[in-house]
Length: 461
Image (tube, rainbow, N blue to C red; front, side, top):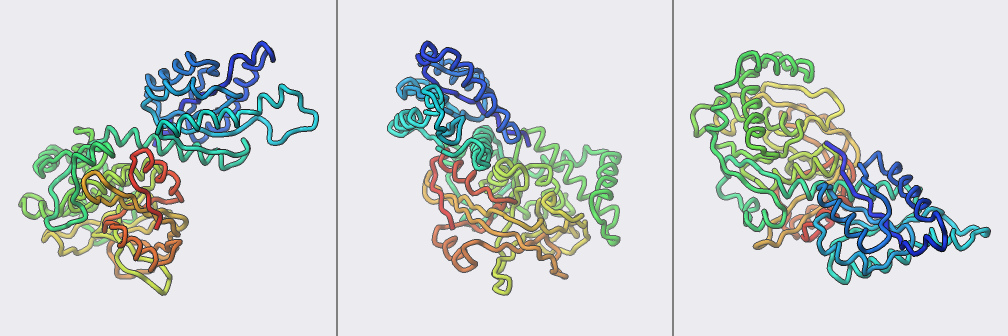
């Protein structure tokens, strides 16, 4: 995953220059120090201070023409709020405004110049009042410039802005949908207008045609890679392994050829088609590890949200389901038919031969793993009515529990911060879906910013 690309809009009044010669250069150097501070989490474009209304307009147009992910506004001195209004009304990029200053305290030896270069706070108030009054979306922050929370804010905003941009142009491949499953139903047009992703329906024939075109050399090359990546079950035959690889490589070519960033496939179509021997569980797991979004059973919205999770969390998004409450560990057991992002595991995954009655086909090779322990964020985009949606978010802890001897599906135990019963009860009360997305790490703030950009309800459960 690439780093977010942000424009730094440094505001200051040019009228200070005659009073304090060199103040513009001084503050531009300060802004370049900020660029270095943020370089670990974002690529920052700072074209110089904007010292009047015309320059602010030029900078905002420049950032938009470069198609950056967002704009970070910093007050280098006071700057009039009205200067920013028209440029922001024409702006298309997500916005954030951070109140920071060169010095952390007022020194008893300060001259008027020192106070002037640190007085951006009241310029921020002038500009933020204008932003809020005009209903312009913006994320706000204030802290000492050396506070680690500042870098986290820039990282969070950058990833939210990047995800918002990527979702606006995303296409999701859809192969059928499970009948009777209610919480995957939504208004496609409303979703595309609000979230941005386009759902593109296709047929299983597109996969089979690409399977037929693969060479034995391509298949054997991937099998060799698997022997390096996974612990291979000795019961797994070459023929079964090769068939799983054929499906994976065909799905990947299909995604690349159509510029799909996520996909969903309902398992019934593969048995009904008559030409397939396995369900594509191995393919789904490999493709999530490759950075694609995925969800089962035709859940196109969840597939797109897994891709959003990859972007928000710098990789590590996972498709999953709540299976069972476990009051012994005060957690919830999660798993699905056999799909999961094995790249989230610290241990070497296993590739096993396993029986699966679902779908009525041959044993599907399945990648077995448990994600690494630590903080993890669970989410669900719940469709309500029309274009009204809400995002449920729950923070929690991925537990170091991998002792299920007879489970032949990727699984994990997760302990919600709010407690098992409170989390599940609030999930139900807010219409949370049964397909979920989980990120490694605590990325709740990033999801919240993204909800603000989408203008959808954010619910912490």
